Every structure is written in C-alpha cells, then in structure tokens.
Amino acid sequence: MARSITVIPARANRTDMAQNAEPRKKRMAAYCRVSTDQLEQLSSYEAQVQYYTTYICNHPDYKFAGIYADEGITGTSTKKREQFNRMINDCKAGKIDVIITKSISRFARNTLDCLNYVRMLKELGIEVIFEKENIRTLDSKGEVLLSILSSLAQEESFSISKNSTWGIRRRFEQGKVIVNHTKFMGYDKDENGNLVINEKQAKVVRKIFTDYLGGKGPNGIAQELEKDGALNWNGKSKWYEGSIRKMLRNEKYKGEALLQKTYTVDFLSKKRVINKGEIPQYYVEESHPAIIDKDIWEAVQFEMKRRKIFAKKHGLHKYDYATDNNPFAGKVICGCCSSTFGRKVWNSTDERLKRTIWQCNGKYKVKGKIGCRNRHIDGGGLYEAFVYSFNTILENKDYFMNKWEKQIKSEDILERVTAKRFIDIFRGVNPIQRFDAGLYFKLVEKIIVYEDGISVELLDGSEIKCA
Image (cartoon, rainbow, N blue to C red; front, side, top):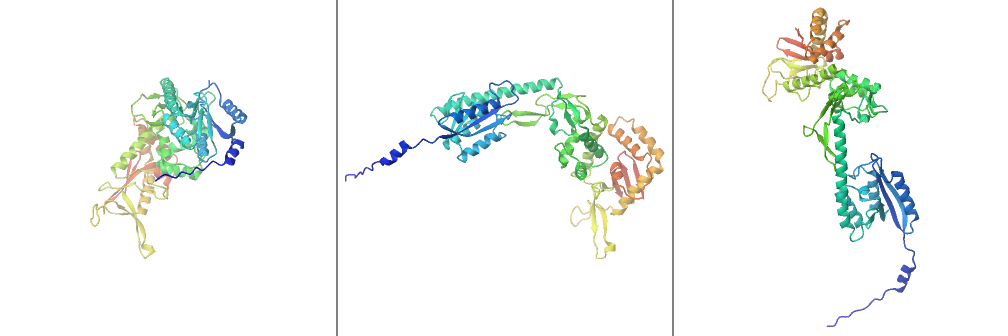
C-alpha cells in the first residue's frame, strides 16, 4: 500500500514577522569579586563595577540586568558569597540571560562548584562569558576548556592558601598573637594592632572569675549576668553556660597565649579541627596586658578539676546544680554511702504537717528495696547547720586566721587563693542570724549527713560538726 504524504507549507506571514521584528536584547548581568587582602591587583573592586556597567549599557545586543559584586569574600566556596547566590536565584527566576565575569578565578576557584553552576545555568539557557579565558559556556568547546582552566584555578587557590598558612605559622613562631578581638570579651586593638584592655568589658570578665571561685557555677553566673543586664562582646545581654566555661579556660585573660589551637584541614571547605599534636603549637608568655591575675586564673583551672572529681565521686552529671532558690542541690552528701541527698516534699491534707525533707538518693535505688539506711533530714536543719558553722568559725576566729595565714604560703595555688579569700570574708564580719546564700556558696564545699549528726565541710578543708 502506497504511503500518502501531505506537505504543509510554511506560513509566509510568520516568516515575514520574524524578519521584520526587532531582535530582543539579552539581559546581561556582571559578577565581580575582589579579595581585599590582596592589595596589588590589576583592577580594583570599584573599577570592575564601573567597567561592566559601562560595557553592558553601551552594547547594542545586551540589556543591563545588574551588577553582582562580592568584596573581600573567599573564592574557594560559594556558601558565604551573598551576591553570587542572589545572582543564581535571579537566574532561576528568569531575570538574566547572560552573565559576564572577568575570569574563572573571579567566578569560583573550586572546580566542582564552578562546573556545577555552569551546567545548571546552561540547562536554564543562560550563558556565562569568561573574558580573560575567552570562554563562552554555550559553545561546544566551552565545557572542555572550562574543566581544564577551573582545575588550574583551584590549584592556584591551593597555592595561595598554602602561602597564607605558611605566613601565619611564621608569625606564630615569632610569638605574634593573632586574635579576633571583636569576639573576644575584654579586649580591643590599638592603631598598631596590639591588644589593649576594654575596661568596661574587663569588669564583667573579672566578675565571672571571682564568682566562679566564690562557689557559683557557669549557669548561675550566666543567669545573674542576664539579670543584671551585663552586655556581652556583641552588645547583647544574652549569656550562655558554654560561653562562660570557655572564658574561664581562656589563657589569654592572664596575658598569655597558646597559638594554633586549631588548624584548617581542607582549603576548599575551610574545615577547622582541634590541634591534638598534628602540627606545632606555640605558648607565648606576657604577650599582652592581663585582665586576670595569674594565680586567680590557675586557681580557677584547679577549681574546675576539683568540681569534676567531686561530681564523679558522688555520681553527679555535673557539680553546678545549686541555685539561690535551691542552694543544697548536689551538695548534701550521705555519710554512709557517699550518694547525694535529694529534696522531697512530704504532702499531707493538713498543711501544718506538709514539709520539705532531704533523703539519700540511694535509699530506694532499687524499687521496693531499701538500700541505704541513713536517716532523712528536715530542710530547715541544713540552713541552721550553715548558720551554726559560720558563727562557730567567728567564735574561733584567731585559730582559723592563723590556719589561713599558713595556707597563703602553700604551694597549692587553689589553697593559697582560697585562704586569701576566707581571710577577706571573715575580717570584720559579724555573727549571722539567718542563712546567707552568698556566704554559703563562697565557703561551703558540701554538707555530710550522718546518722547522729551533720558535718559542714568548707572549701579550705575545714570541717565543722553540728549536733
């Protein structure tokens, strides 16, 4: 059977319309990037912006679609390049037909990123023009050339990163401290780039160290700073427990600096890891003015270790449970099994019989079985025990003062600092009639409950037995 073929002629008027219609100008945008740490460049950031604005506006085939410019941002990754990412979003939204840029190294120094973005733009029908390399990505040879040149650009970036790292490490070897002072509470930089004390912030730093040695925990310190409206390095009154801990461990507050605590393992991702001996570290003494006395700083480090040991010994997740509203949390210890006591409320329909008691957490560790047989104690008895202990020390003030004077000469820094603090507290103080939470935190390490009495142990090692 013979096939029947019908020819449908082209419409003459459609061809005529296409020939007579004015060609649509392509919307061209330019992408510029200049690393501000490289002072000597053939063209500056401003020059690129001006050049591309003039070029596009005066070109007969293109319509100006904007300049997208990142200044002083790394070229190895597109994550932090806001203008670049905005340009890509505008491309997806159909606002751009052509992108022009100076070179591959301005567009991206990461081969994978460069090729992925070029291919994605190609699928959208958007051409990228690299002036220096004379590459147009919609040409058939464009991607082959782009792949080769992108690899060379990435290798150049690696070389720059390597040279930069070498320079930083040479400065470390010379003891030159490099600190981002904008995120470093307590310090500013002078016109020569040297660290100088910001006295307003330094007062807050000193308070943090003093309060910690005074028995408060990082969480309690953070809450108190927020309550007082104390400002952080960023000008906000929001404080975090983790930030307080980092500050307490930072050796720079005593005027010394450990350099190269972290290092970059991948120049593309900029991933940094803690230096655990993979590369050299440098410890610089008296590198800048100190905010915290060295003995105080060292005492804080020993106090941290003491609290950690205390928590481990008594089965606590952390040492700093106590608050002004619940000062005995984690500090009342069973004299029989060394477990902590927990606060319990004995309820009753008769309000007069309702009371708070403290009971060994090991008593009913296994449900239905009595474990530790130590007695419970009324909450009021703990408050009374501290008042009694404080006044007992005052009654025997000469004995304790002599003891602390000897401890001041101790080789143990924590013992030395604690003795000085105790002398200051008890010099000229009067007996107390009621519980004082501030004094309690400054003086008491723990309260031990025995079957026949209570013992209050102080941070200086003294022990006061109460009936």
